[in-house]
Amino acid sequence: MRASASGSAAQPVPLRARILAALAAVALLSAPQAAGAEPGAHAAIVGGAAAAAGQLPWLAYIHRAEGGGAYEWCTGTVVAANLVLTAAHCVEDVSSGTLDPAADFTVVTGSPDWSDAAHDEVSAVTQVIPDKTSIETSNNGINVVGDAALLQLTTSTTAPSVTLYDGSDAALSAPGTPATIAGWGITSPTAGAGPETLQQGPSVIQEQGWCYDEQQTQFQATAQMCAIDAPSYATSACDGDSGGPLLVEASGAWTEVGITSSSATCDTQRPDIFTRVDYVRAWVEGWIAVLPAPPPPAAPQPSAGPSTPAPAPTTSLTVPDVGYYSGKSAQRAGRVAVTLEPRGLTSLRLRFNLSCPHGSWRGPFTTAERVGPLALKLSAGAWRFSTTFRDRRGWHYAVAGAFSTFGTAHGTLAVKNGDASCATKVLDWRAAIHGG
Image 1 (cartoon, rainbow, N blue to C red):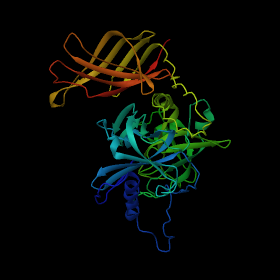
Image 2: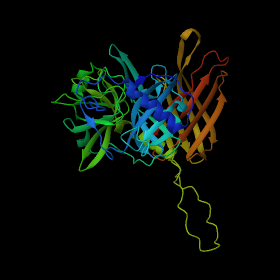
Image 3: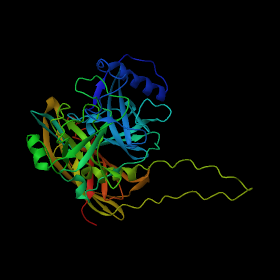
């Protein structure tokens, strides 16, 4: 559901000019207007309406250049000054796990109109961080469970952060709850491009059993939710709305409860599928802690004469909880477990498969190592470790990770056999604490 378009190639230009010039080409690809239609008017997200200035201020437009003038776009939400939440399938080939380069992305925040140069904040992307749990394929295509990703912005935004649903207030995700979908997606299945202005529309959260039936058993209630604009059946998410929010308003406060993952060909008669925000919230908050945004520059203070220089600031980052952390890698059946003690990392257990020549797979294999203790090092705002070693078979391992203060850890691992003929690729992993 990320949308794509193409255009003519252009010479390199400064970032703001490049994004506005590239996105301006979208208007040239719009479907022809009906006779008598107001010039520049759009139908909406499929049946919705344009967001006003200052409305839904957390929304982010995500643009990915493909070269030769071609591009794709998605929607996202600001969750920290330097992080935007979107869908994993917006940043990678989900069937292969290949990430799109961070350098290809540009993010626009600060205004519902991406072409509003006076108010837009345009940023490049430093890092792409996917968090899909699994992929299921069927006659209906690919279903990404845990379809979420973060984009780390090079330049922090002043846009406010959206409130993420933590599951504590069941009323916010209960069947029958009115909700709002939003994004810059195309406004009909035949439209060639999305609108300049953010679109929004009403929807209603549905009972999980009904979602399961509609998805022909491809739906996973623990990680997904669905919504449809009943009884009107007038709105739907569409291509380009991927990664955008499913929002619920209660007592004047907005909460993001879902991340747009898939839609049945923009059909208003079929439900939209969302990743549950409470399913990925701890992961998001872990990254917010690991990648704190740089503080804004201090305002100059009038000087009353010579003074003693202020002492250098010290970090206040809390040391992570000690205990046994276990979780999954991005590989099917992959597992990771580590033990953190006050003196450092003391054990490491991996479960993985090796890819061998001619497309064959071997495994799963399990290795357990006593390490160290391997001390954690404070780097880039997080407590980190990295280690390489060989086992008795001569296989080579490279494992790195970072611990948050939320009882979670994440990192990468890679394994090669003795002659390097079989190997994993570099895999992402994440784990949660199970004891103190």
